[in-house]
Length: 230
Image (cartoon, rainbow, N blue to C red):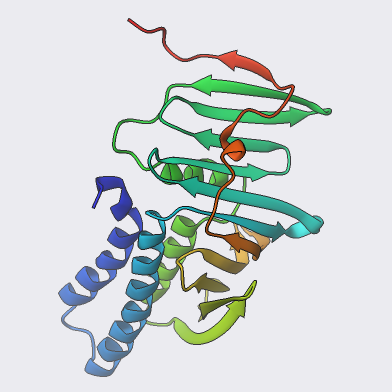
């Protein structure tokens, strides 16, 4: 497994490790916590496997707007588009496009380090834009699994025509609901981000990706900041 693909699974493994060292926990609490950790581990493994897939997904976000994510393999590349912007990561460049007054400007920077997962880089940027991502959701689930006061309820559902496992999390600090499809794609999330309510719902999932999604938008201005070759 590529090193970067362990990002999500590491979160879940930390649940087991921390529960193991808290030996003074009451037996009933430990059994309940391990049950919650099992749920988190299963979803983490599912999302981790999804990093190795080729797929595209469209999401509905607040305000009737949409965001989309796509990734393909061999070569590994990934792209996330949101209202007003887009980030694409390939083995040639990390490209950030911003839309301002109907004008699109794309800035090309160096690609990520070899063996890095393009999707991990894209998700990190998407979070900076206030968007919900699989790593963010797994972080929330991991925290909840370690919280003895949290209640995590698992249920089956269908999201955009795909089977999904959903978890309802209730904590004193925050509550949220998240769904993960059988393929490992993030199906939905309803909760808070930086104190603000956020919501995301999968509206379309496909196991194919149009290669054009990784191209520069037509008519975009280009600023190339990649280092000159030798």
